[in-house]
Length: 71
Image 1: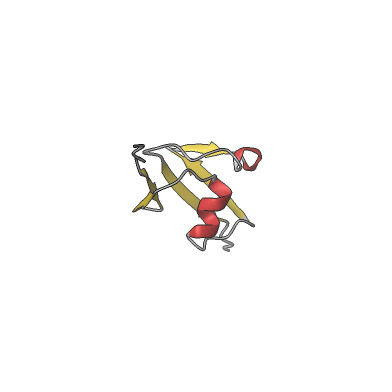
Image 2: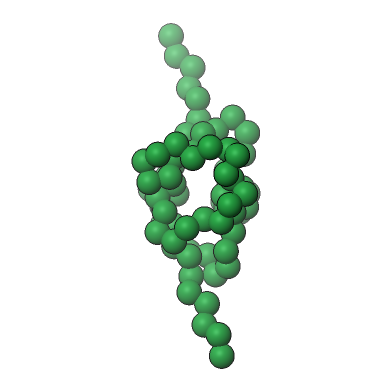
């Protein structure tokens, strides 16, 4: 009997748990967050879009950042 350990991550300060492995891109879609016009930081470091198809790691803290215009 195989036991699945949930993947716990924090996105924009909110804890989430997923039963299965998923990529950053799938995570954004599942949480209804935009994939366009955003940047990501994982554990405080920029996470390039070229890596968004890699699996999300357990315990990651992810910040989804959008550009803000100001004057």
